[in-house]
Every structure is written in structure tokens, then in C-alpha cells.
Length: 139
Image (tube, rainbow, N blue to C red; front, side, top):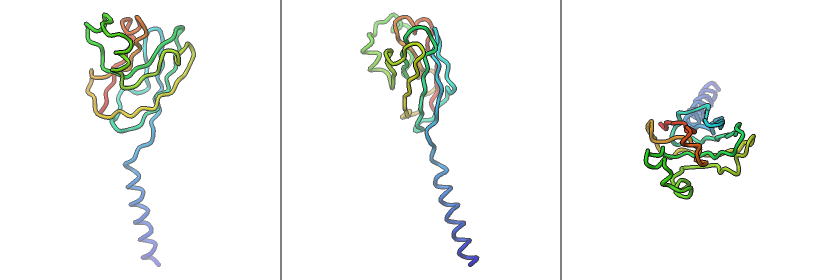
């Protein structure tokens, strides 16, 4: 009888250990304002699913993108909106982020990205240049 209880405890412990390595979806609150971005997290882990809850607290439409920062020459808008969209890892379009709106984006970073390699940004004309970007790190 004691032996059976011991085996049940061992099996339960192994089951919990196997589940311990898995992570659920992590919710991240992102706030867009004129002209800034705030986030409850700026350090992420590759392979972990995130639910980004993006709220536009500003008075004008914004968009939300996860992408590499623009270089100095790209900031002069040598890239059109289509090219920006193609470079984004993920995005929420401007028509979904009207003033007061909240949109959700499910995203898992596929690989690590060191400081300076990725950022949250808004590329509505003039917003990025006004400083609407937030560097992030993916470990």
C-alpha cells in the first residue's frame, strides 16, 4: 500500500515537472499617445506566446508595428507604407487604432533580437519622426 502511494507521488511529481517547462500566453499592455509608446514589458523571450493589448489613448489614429528601427536615411520616408508593412514582423493597422480604441495582437517572437534590433513603432506619417517608438529586446 505504501509502495503504491509512493509510485503515485513520483508519477505526479514527474507530471508537474514536465508541465513546468511550458509557458502560457503572457499579456502585455501597450499604450499609444501623442507621440509615445509605453509598454508593460520591453524584454521578451523567443518562443513565448504574447497577447499585446494595444490601446490608443491619443486624439488621432495610430498604428502599431513590431519591426527593426529605421536608419537615418530611411526616416526621410524613402520607404513607402507598403515597404514598411513588408518589413514589420507584426502590425495593427491605423484603421483599427482610432482614438480610444483597443486592439489585440497575438505574437510569438521567432528568435532572439539584441538591444537595438527591434522596436514597437507607429509609422503614421510624421509620428515616427516625432519619437513614436520604443526599443525592445528579445532573449
